[in-house]
Length: 81
Image 1: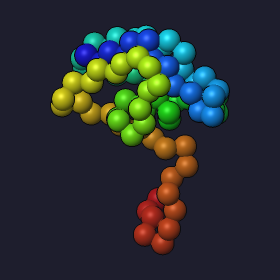
Image 2: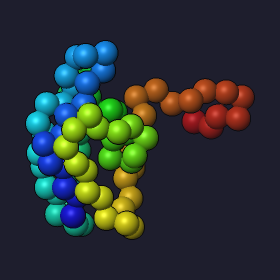
Image 3: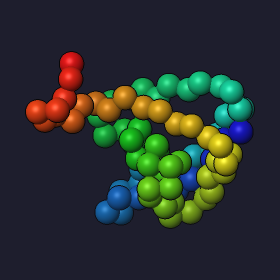
């Protein structure tokens, strides 16, 4: 189960998350939707441990898998479509 408890995260003093709490049972699939700049990617980076919350906690099972589709795919000569 994924637990987010009283999550607080700010960027340059602007609150992105301010006391967010959620519990997602194991085996569930969740979609994040929202306007640009709403914090979807930031939340994924917090859950993955790439960023650290200013306050609160995030509990993630050891064998978790998180997948996402980037808004813009990386380009290059080796890219296939």
